[in-house]
Length: 316
Ligand code: RIB
Image (cartoon, rainbow, N blue to C red; front, side, top):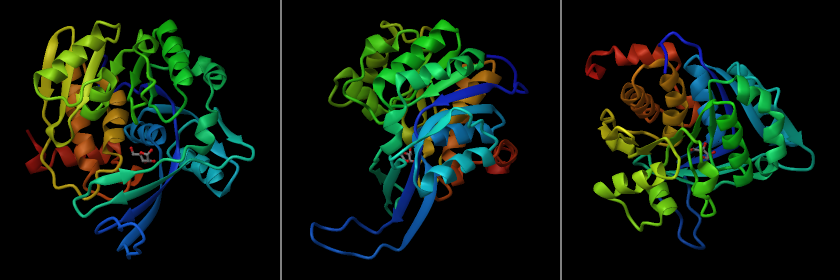
């Protein structure tokens, strides 16, 4: 970790989706049709969201992903370019549709998400190897699990080979994810449910989080950070376990808050000398993203983020 003025180069190897967001009062019963109060179309996908958060916070970002040959494909590429993200390793897949995500948000701001991966299924290990130069020159690479596991393993191995820092956000959890494929990974960042699924626990509470995370450390992962929603995050590494609280907010839409955490942590971890401080900043960035509707649309620029932190009730 270095200094706060550093402009890190970050490569994201992951998904993109078009988010079809319905704001609803309740889900319909089988056979029932009900009216929902509102709808929004937005750019999403965990990889894309994390790339956009990192770019907004000033990083130089490369996106490695696949889009379909449909009306969304060109728009998705243009959206990345509008954020100044390098799109040279994005390809269109002939005859495939772009990834889409129907999302349902309830009045408490909680979401339910379906993903239809489409062209994201074509981000193969070979496509990852084509991005080898970017992985080698980057300060950090980021992956999630909306692409094939073999591609994720390939990317982790390449990052390890070039000593580029790496973050895996195992979302959504894939039951076939193998600890052996994660050797050399710097940061494994699940939420509680994902950690429980990966470690085979039915539910996690208190000390269980620490024990489960420690199992992963013994398998070659350097740091585990468990995200706990409104309760913040828990860091488990060789120095022990620390809770990092999040600020209290009243969320309007939590969709993409996890991605805001990961994308911002990618940047802050390269700029702060202390991991706990970087995680605290990422908690703040994610919390602020829940105050607006949508995914990428709800992320703040670096300037706006630090301006918000300086507001009286946000000082801590
Ligand atoms: O994490 C939120 C994201 O999950 C949404 O943007 C949706 O596209 C799914 O990938």
